[in-house]
Image 1 (cartoon, rainbow, N blue to C red):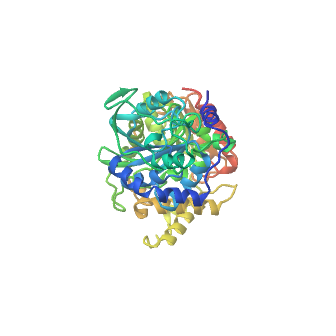
Image 2: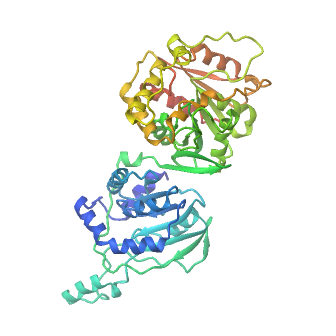
Image 3: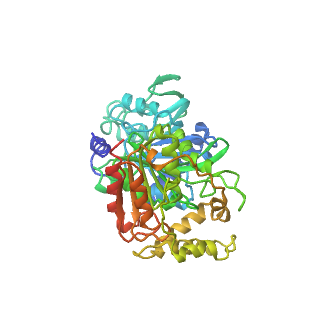
Length: 517
């Protein structure tokens, strides 16, 4: 059974159409629970750097509370209501909390990564599982050894003052009344510690909420949009003393596709929509920030504290963090050079190779006689525009947009799209001056003893027909020298990630290629 099918089945079991409180009642509900939220926050004991799972997160109040404390750690909220999650994402974006993400799914069956979370929390989100034993077994599997589970749940009916007052007014005892629907019993997991699956739980008990004002939500079958909603996880990890920020899309159980960006590019140039479509095709997609881009480690402008070899081995650090032994590598421009080096030096880590808008990264025994960049691209190196005032955000965004213009192909320069991406990059980058400089002052450490015909990974070459940086002959050279390589042309593309007009072509080629390995 697929994940959308499991979600649909769970929603059906839990009671019919998806009737979510409109904004005002939801706000009133959160306001009513303010005192209980404070007690929940105290009981959870979220620490900086924690990975937190929020079960039945609703509109994300508890997710956001945890995210504020967990930073630079991450919080994942999961819920069956797509409408509630839509509001949760909007509220989280307005709060500028980029370490909180949401999934549409059923915690009873959702394929969480094994032994991943330090803490699981829930505000009334664990009381409606059709199979509590299966649900808590699945949650336990997702928790690391020594992790804790903290839940806020209702009192039993006999001790629930809100309910007992109603029954007294109606002249009905709590014992005589029926439960308000299937699956609404309180869950009391065994006393801690206990072992299930991959994680050891330490269960924190706390006082039960005495006023169940909120009605039990019911749910409809997920829409097509809900079923295709991608999962995302973004976090920064410290490895070998350096920070690397990455974001993952899709099911970790699927084959991993690691996207490696070009020089001076952060992860955002592999657009979210592109990553999502690959994930929907059954791939676990990972993009990351190079050093000196985005949220990863930054050095002073012009003085990088790392080598070109360090950039080459950073993808392996990301894969090690994810517990991935082999991956499909997709590298663009400088990222394509990195991917070639990994395929040559660490072939056991590479399932397949996809080289986009790039050139041979190692010498050949013959003169390739490859054409140089176009005059407009050459001018960016020989006669660069003066840098902006790096303290002026708008000036830096404009500078970043113009830096991409010379690399456009015959499809044209999509300025609104580039401005949107440049704005995202500027707003999330530690030091834009370093980002636009440091990759280009690294010493060349090209290995002299390697040849492209030593690459054993199945290889796909994606190359724009009007690439002004590496004209088409560069892609053709890669396809000719790497044994069995396949060349797919991107008509009208320049030196860039595949433009949206060509996503169907590029994504289909990558999906088909990564069926191998």
